[in-house]
Length: 224
Image (tube, helix red, strand yellow):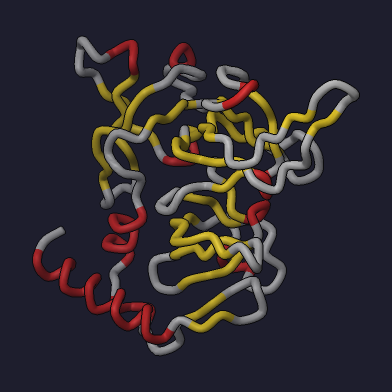
């Protein structure tokens, strides 16, 4: 960012830290921060996926042959709210595709499993808690709350793709998530935020929405 926007962001962060207050478990607001402290463009820059993030396009209607293939984000254009993505198959040509975040799913590395019931039979017990994994896709139609497809990196399941409920995946700090199904603060539904921490006793994420924080359950903050 330029010096002005960096200064605005630093001031916002200091105020947000001082004024953060946890409310009823669905939202936490820093009430003294004016919403216009950060212009929409600066908010979008601040919350954008970082360069190098692995993504998979799903709804490229003009280039359908690239749907389901992996690429990497190379830049973000805040003016039009779109990403430039270099597909793996196009790296020699350095040919990028412009797309919005709703057109792809992100691959999230450095995830861990937690709150997964052990799997038992007569001969052995398999405990996957604390095993490392990567979210490779979100499946909204699996079960009532949807499931993540994850690539396992540890233990007996290493190399397999398994499916878990959102509350069984601990997403890392900085992960971009889409808010959904809030009952009280419905204006956040469909908006994107960034995970700032996991609160174990609440079993909720604290999500930075750019101008304030909210507390939400994992099934309402989806890395899709």
